[in-house]
Image (cartoon, chains in turn red, blue):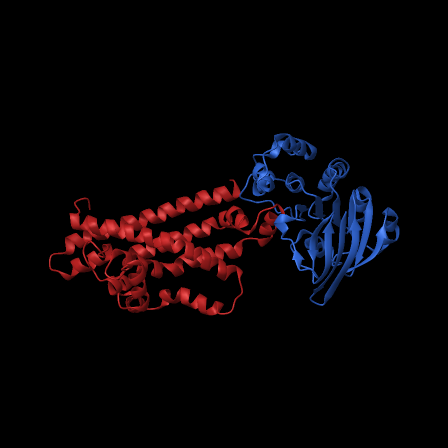
Length: 231
Length: 226
C-alpha cells in the first residue's frame, strides 16, 4: 500500500481535505440544531427533525440530485451564491464537501442531541445563580458536559464523509484532482481492465483511515470521560 | 432586607406567599409540598411569579406590574441546592472559583482561604465532586455560593440528602456562617430541629400560604403537625 501513485495520493489528500472541511463546517450547525431539538419546543419541530434525518433515509443519488438542482450554477441557491459572492460549488471540491457534510449531518446531530438531553439542566440553573449569563453557561457547563456526545458525532460525520459516494458523484461528478475522492477513485479503477491492483491499494488506505478514525475517537472519548468524572 | 410578595399558579396548586427576611437566618418552614422550594426559586429568579414583587434592599428583582424580571445571573443571590449541584467536570477549587470567574471579579486569595477555613474544605481542593462524601459536597456547595459574594444566601434543605451523622457535621458550619458572614440567610426546611439550631426568624408555610411569621416560639405547635 506504500507504492501509491501520485494520482492515488491526490485522491487520498482530497478525501481527507473534503471530509475535514465538511465536518468542521457542519459542526456549528450540528450544535445549533442539536440544541434546538434537545431544548426547545417550537412550531415545525417535527419538520426540522425530519429534514435533518432525510439524508439518512433518502437514496444518496436523490440527495445529490437535489443538491445539484439547488446548488448548481443554474439552481436558485447556486445562482445566488455565484452572483453575490462568486462562489461556485458544482464540480468543485467545495461542492463535494457540501454533499459530504449534508450526508454526515444526521449522524452528527443525533449524538449531540442525545448528549444535550442527558445533561441535568439543574446544573445550568446553578451556574446562572453563580453569575453566568446564558452564553457563559453554555460554554462552561453545557458544552463540556456534552463533549463525549459531540466527539462521537464528529467521528461519525467524518467517517460518513470519508465514505460518501452517491450524493457526491451525482452533485460534483468524478473529476480527478478536484472531486475524485478515494471512493470515487476505487469505483473508477474497478471500471477499467487491470485496475484491480490499484483499487486494492486504495481499499487498504480506506481501511487504515477508518481504523485510525475509530481509534482516535475512542481515545478522545476516554479522555473526555476522565475529564468529566476525574478518574 | 428581602421583601417577597408573590403569587403563582402551579397546576392545581396556588402559591401565594408574603413575608420579609432581614439579617440573621429566616427559616421557611413547612411540610413537603408547601411550596417552599418554589418560593426560593422565585427569589433566585429561576421561576417567574405570575403576580407580585420581590425586592432586596433597594433593588427591585421582580415586579410583575412594572415588567421587571432581573435574570438570575445578575441578582447576586447565592443558592445552595438540596443536592449540591456541584459541576462534575470541575475540581473542587474550580467549583469554588466559578462564581468569581463568571462575574469577572479579581482573584482574592484571602477571601478564598477564609471561606475554605470556615467550612473546613481546604484539603479537598484538588478532588472532583464525585469523590466527595455527602457532607463534604454540601460544604463545598455552601463555599461556592459564598465566594460569589452574594447579597443573600438561599439554602434549600441543604441537609436533606445527608444521614444524621453528616447533618451533625454540617450544622455547626451553618451556625458559624450565620454569625460570621454577615449575609442574610433564607433557610428552607421541614425539620423543626434544624430551625431550632439555625433560625432567628420563622416563616411557616402550609399549602402554598404563609400561615405564621415570628420567632422560634412558632415551633412548639408546629412540631406536632410535622
